[in-house]
Image (cartoon, rainbow, N blue to C red; front, side, top):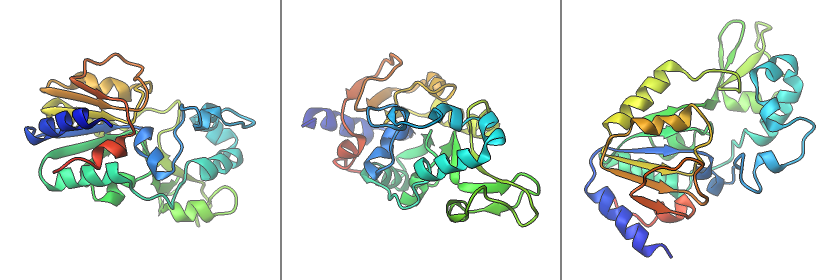
Length: 241
């Protein structure tokens, strides 16, 4: 299946020199990490509070115990491994084809696969810091801590992830927008393009080829040259770099 579309994508990649990949949760579902909005995603599971409530700034400050219970259970997949999509993107960067990965994911799997120029719009579970003294803690420390993770100074540790009600990091925004604006090809994968402001970043693309690879339709109508309604790993693993 998708042989014709894959051949077309291969031709686009062959003639491109500055590819940027813009990805979301669908990139990591093939690594066993649930997304938020699909039929079996986190939003469709039963909790006392909605996931959108739990991962908000105000909820984190008011109910840190409940936040960390959900966060550890559903958002810290430390045993997940990169899948063929992550690996192929790293290969494309190593080959000098891909200039940047812009991701809405916080799992760190792009870096685990070998990608170096990654703009993490929503932060990373692998960076955690004390809100009092700023000391850094890794993900394993937070995952295995019993209760609300605390620093040796007595402060509370928080993950370096962007919660609802919080703004994105300005340096990350500028880097991502610059990469997209300079790209000759933009591949959008594994995202429904419903989370703003991140979804609006694709408006900065002025290049030649726009490709969408996503199992379901994107919420935004994008004028894509090529649309492939398939799991992204299944498509990417067929490509030659």
